[in-house]
Amino acid sequence: MTTEQKPWMNRTPYQVYFEALWSAPEGYALVPIEPTPDMFNAGQACGGYADRVYRAMLAAAPSHAETR
Image 1 (spheres, rainbow, N blue to C red):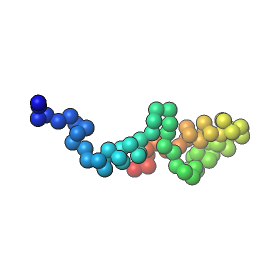
Image 2: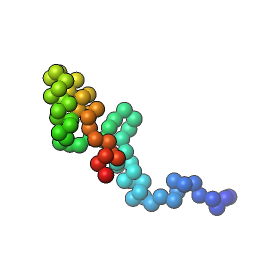
Image 3: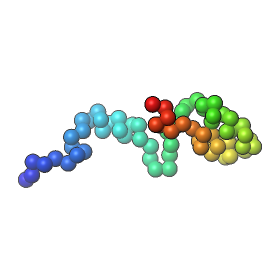
Image 4: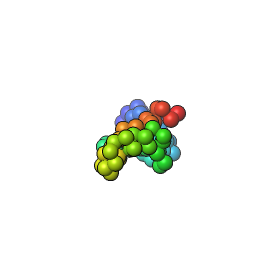
């Protein structure tokens, strides 16, 4: 048996929990609950169809790095 630990074994249960909590599955995005002004403007500018509004607002949503 080896004493070497895998990197994931060094994380605490809380770290694992919060990493899972704040990550999104592939194809999903974490976005603000309330649209930002840029998101709202993108939704207004795309013609008013719900699918276009949704895509435009998601495209205009700030990235996680921008919100830090």
